[in-house]
Length: 332
Image (cartoon, rainbow, N blue to C red):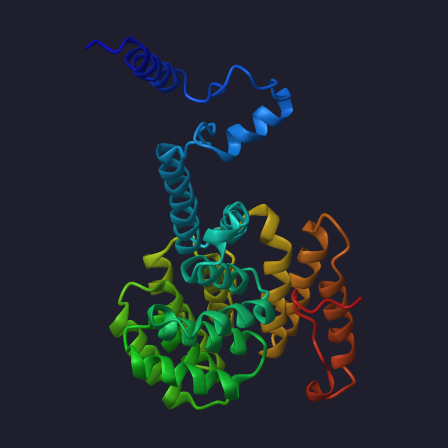
């Protein structure tokens, strides 16, 4: 017997199921009152017809990471070239996640040290010193920051620890040499500079510091040789060039010390040479150089004027009672 009724119901149910699967969230019963649109939208979010979430653009994420890496690498290159203000600008452009990495924090510490902000640099070095990858380098930075702050004792302790862990840290050796110079431990200073040059034979910084050590010991000819070696390594190192002029002047080689001056630096150089001549007792030469400094200076040269007054006092006072003024310590 053929049963029409139940078969028709079953076939109808199958068709309804197919229709439901094809349209997803269609109402199950035509007899129900239509839901409000806002309720239907809410149900879409909670049921199986929720709209897809935002897609993560992995390529954009990779590009952003590469951009941050490029900024950090450029800042490190600037630090190596002593372009500290430019490195500072780059580091401040890093996003917060990258800026908090040990690598970026160490770079910022080096920048602050190079910009003569040793207190801030010290805090940054101390913060990164616990990272194994930067432990010895941070010790070196801490010691150099302490030295710049005038704390030679703590600087020596930290720099000693740094070179004990890594004898190749030539900047630490250079800093130790300076600390020993301040204490007039000339032998220790010479040994530190020698080890620094072993670690970095091409360092003009160490050669300049060695020259200053010899200058402080009144070994002027040897000091001049060290400054000349520093300039041979880096002809743009103006500090070594200025120090060479002083070393030559202490040998009485005044005119030679003034060779190759730029017009912008001539007034200060003349005053400095005159200052050395005055200390050597060459009062006539000193007066000549101070007068020339006053003449070529675009503004009133307080240091040269004060030193000319000192020459007048020397005629009736002992030299030890006089405090001549260099270009670095002008009279207000």
